[in-house]
Length: 164
Image (tube, rainbow, N blue to C red; front, side, top):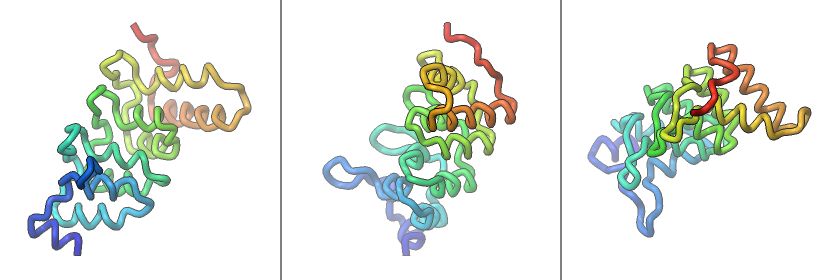
């Protein structure tokens, strides 16, 4: 049904009333990739930007409880190093939002943790900063350390160069 609607010209990026997100953005925040897959099947580009903030809609998948919608977007060709208005990459924004499973998936899919945002920080810098403020052995420290190990395994530079 959704695929046919999109193929027929229905706009999955049309914001809903009262400033609510578009159907595509709403679908990306969900637990299942079924709806976003149907929209992509209908012709929605995985690299399209929303109509309000002009940011890649793939960023909305970072708000989902699991990585299903992000995986669907990446499988269909979403840019793994897409940036938002602050120049933050998906992997940097995922770290900021404590979406750690998303961070690990993005690193596995080739996200570059060294890309600097407009403020001069990279995801690697933010990770180093977050790790320095945590107690060793805490659950968050363990998860961030797992991310650090994955970053190194994927060829990321550690420790990151200081922010100038």
